[in-house]
Image 1 (cartoon, rainbow, N blue to C red):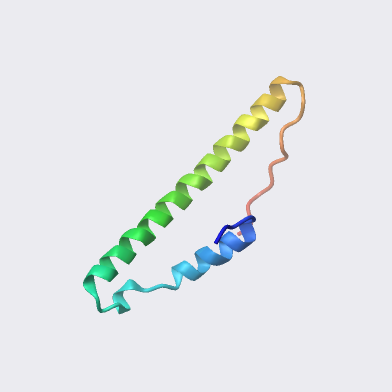
Image 2 (spheres, one colour):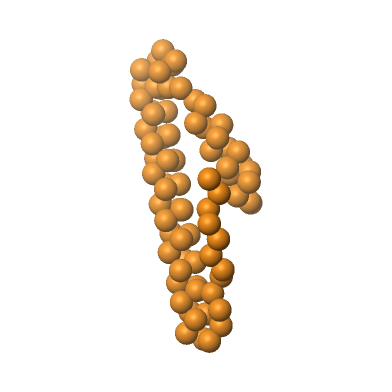
Length: 77
């Protein structure tokens, strides 16, 4: 399944957070699932960080061109 927008990705990540590996009896499957969930979490964190860096670099390029950067809004709480 390919996610083409952040809304569907957010929904999928919410569903992943509902998974409880402790309820799985097969130890090999449980450890594999735990590992995969940790990888997904780590990659999502890295993607978020890279998106912020990418936007900052785009803003800097635009500033150097004499344009204005993307306006900054407070994050939702």
